[in-house]
Length: 226
Image (tube, rainbow, N blue to C red):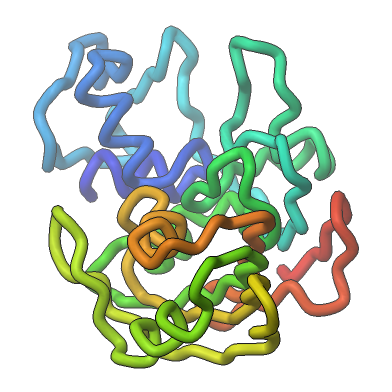
């Protein structure tokens, strides 16, 4: 079994985070530091240590939460600057980790789980899981912005951004509110789309991720889904 997959299966971290741990020399197999990707191990025979702590095989029940992340909360397990993190809003046990990220100022759906394979499938670009966001903004020319969004492709310096679905819910005066669905995960992609079209984002909320929805979950609250 691949080392990163094993770490994820044990609920320690997502596969991507496991790769980061390996690259940063924080993982040992049989007392030897491993820094190469793709290393294979035998979970029944090999001893894995992460940051000085043995990683024991566990039989913990898979647990997944949907959290409605408030604004100002960071999507990490801990924060050196003392900001609240998404883990402050769910039970301490069993241990879970955030699946993907939202920037601190973006609200809404964050999945927290100890299922590394689920996290991998939801975040890896090849699976193209869709994400829906509610944008509440102001704009000098809402009609122009709306017309450009309806074209389905926005040209950005690092490549085109494809819009899978769009639903305008308010366009009056300088106010423009809409739902936008995309399937890619480039950093701050929705905010960058809006900036390109002259839309100042007042509030940004992720409402859907793959098959998971924020419906019925109040800000700062969570729902257990497995």
